[in-house]
Length: 391
Image 1 (cartoon, one colour):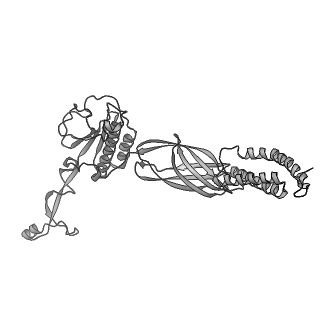
Image 2 (cartoon, rainbow, N blue to C red):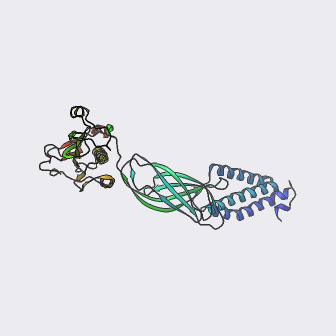
Image 3 (cartoon, rainbow, N blue to C red):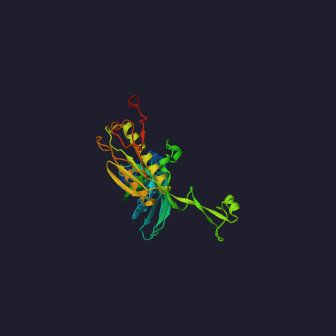
């Protein structure tokens, strides 16, 4: 005899109610297990909901009240439907990641995620995307309120890469608690991408060095734009009055115009000595990273001033060049550079020509016995961490 056919409050109803409870558990429990088979714990609200459902089930077992059995059944069905819809929301989704071509450490970068829903009729709702690297570290989060069927939706999140180097993106984890917020489900979508982050660029006033005079212009002994006087000539009618030499004009009783010498930028050879005696020492490695930032910042400012800049390291050389392309070539080399063992001879030897300035960056105490040519400007980066601090 089924427990629903017994009158309320009867003794037989209580006994048959216990039998009905066992039968209900045998029927409902497999569905509950299937609902929780996928990874994803219940939320706080879901845990409270399950506790209430269990209490109502116990009350129904003790009292044999059919209404309590009905409420318990509805709550279990509500929980199972929530898990089913939550799982359905995460099906047939794909993601694409879009990043800027050039990323500099320390600067805010917007990373865009485009989510596509491959389901024919059903939209996906309430999706939180977590962008992760191969080491499982989370780069950022963004939220998709609704992803229509077969329609891409984009969202972005700000990200700041603190250090230079190669970052390997691995996956995007989509999490949802739709529709009732009782169960949390997630799915990992593969989205691999390697991103190179350039060293941080600092302004001149934060570098701790002034622009040396050798970085400036040199006279070319040719007529052109500059500051040194090249000569005087008679003013043409179509020319403005800005460069008229009024004293000479008064003497000769005709308009005389000043002409200037053309100035050329000196070539600058930046030398980064990446030979470290203790490459695994945290203090030495941090000083080396700051030397890289110093080199990248100086190269950036010189190239903005139209200098011809070359980068020389023990791992390779970036030949002379100017403009944005040279800037990115140097920044790419500095983003990938690693310490090498040992010291050796100086990277630049011989006499320095008059049209070239050599600037050497190295860690304090590194290769102290190596002598660079006279006229080369050397900048040593001190270790901020002492051995006592490391302990």
